[in-house]
Image (cartoon, rainbow, N blue to C red):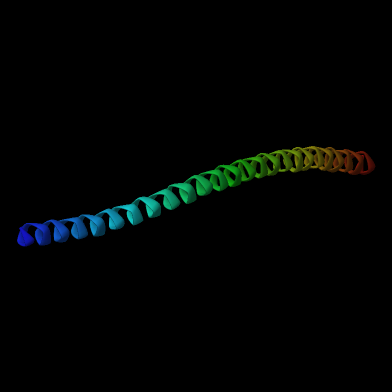
Length: 91
């Protein structure tokens, strides 16, 4: 009988130890899951911020490009006008 009780006590201790190990693993998993959710939110927010910044930069590039094209057209007209004027002076 003592042997059976001793074996039962050993089994109970072993199961308690395994249960504690599993409880620790579950706690770690839960903390990792929470951290993962926080990182997902941060990533999503940062991604949206960067997308908005890219849109702003594309808009700025478009404005600058349009201004450049307009200024280039103005300069081409000025050069043409100067050429025409110089040609008239020669005649």
